[in-house]
Length: 153
Image (cartoon, rainbow, N blue to C red):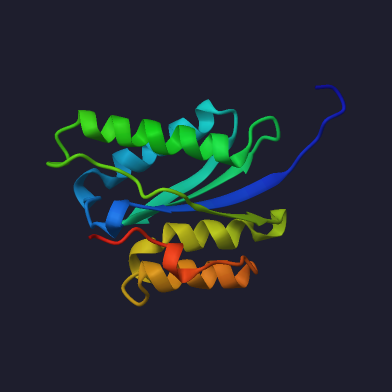
């Protein structure tokens, strides 16, 4: 659309169902590449995708013609479908329902990029649960801990 300008930077964080540690170092880079391509398919622009065994962080430039929920639905459904077609996982792979999405200013791009790039080192010191709650609190997102994660029954 003419005369429409935007600059929307979003970090999305989402977990493997039951926070299972299934994303393996041997194929994680390829999987993150698939997720990055899926973000680009929506018209948004991937900045970085990285994660650890039980969750993924995506940082991208969001386009306004698509909602974040539409972008996330595309990423999560197609990436789990891709992974289930490989021989990388023995059981059916699923993402937990929901996600966290946090917006940033242009001046924060380098810091967020480095943070996501260093996920492996970061999670030697902090669990995903505490990281996620810290993000929610830093961004003043109201939440009920009972509904943060799907627990294995």
